[in-house]
Length: 281
Image 1 (spheres, helix red, strand yellow):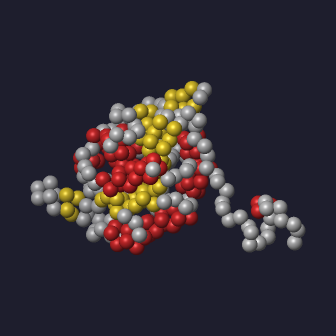
Image 2 (cartoon, one colour):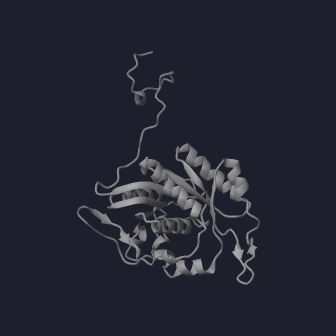
Image 3 (cartoon, one colour):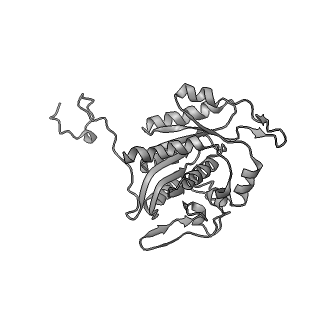
């Protein structure tokens, strides 16, 4: 065997001294950005309400007195601008792209803010989509955002993998629904987070129940919740259960999500703020 050069990238030998630490592929944010903690909202499948949970958590953290941004990484299904009533295009100059400000001051960047027609479908292959998401991190001037939320694309494929490799995520929130397949959804997301060595803050169950407007009884439209047993299986906390609420749906449709009323995500907000408090110590 040839003499060791300590450069494992050029060596095929499986010796005991081989360096096991993976190469850091994280991209640097724009030089004018000052981002605190990055929280990704994920799920093992689509259609469970990641964008809603992203918006509600971001608004709740902003209400607690912190500066917040939302990076909409769901390039083929961007819905965050609609929830906040943001239309028109983002602007920029020679230094970079500026995120749009919501009515109450949250920074927002989405592919819909760069298209001439927001209704035009984005028919791109995975590498192009991943490249666009990376540019939202490297080319957008986020300014001073204490917490940046990333609305992740669904699943565990090429684009989510690229996002996790490119953006230094401090923690993830996993979104589920009450159906029996919830355990499979969570397990996929948990395993991906573990493989990428990213802390999981906990689980949020969307469409958890409907509440009778007359008597207040909770009606499990999609069956009894499995969130507690799934959370226990993986050793994770339950950060909230969001009901099927007509007022909440109307707020999203009217672009008025910042005016929602509800305390369903208090635990999620606490977990997010805990990241910042840990860094300050």
